[in-house]
Length: 82
Image (spheres, rainbow, N blue to C red):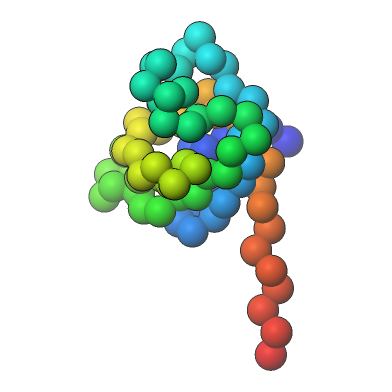
C-alpha cells in the first residue's frame, strides 16, 4: 500500500522512500525531503492544510498537495507495556 506524508497522523513518523523530485520545489529538497531521511508529522492546521513536519531536524510547513508526492515507509511506534 502506498503511504505518503499526507497520510500521516499527528506524531507518526516515517522514512522517505521516494519522492517525485520533478513535482517538489527545490527548497524542499534542500531542506532534506530526500530518500532515507526521517519525517514526522508534528501538527496539522485547523482545516487540514498545511502540514507542519519535521524532516531531518528542519521544521517545515508543507501543503497537503505536495505531501502526496513524498512516499514513505511508516516507522511503527513501540508497543506500550502495561
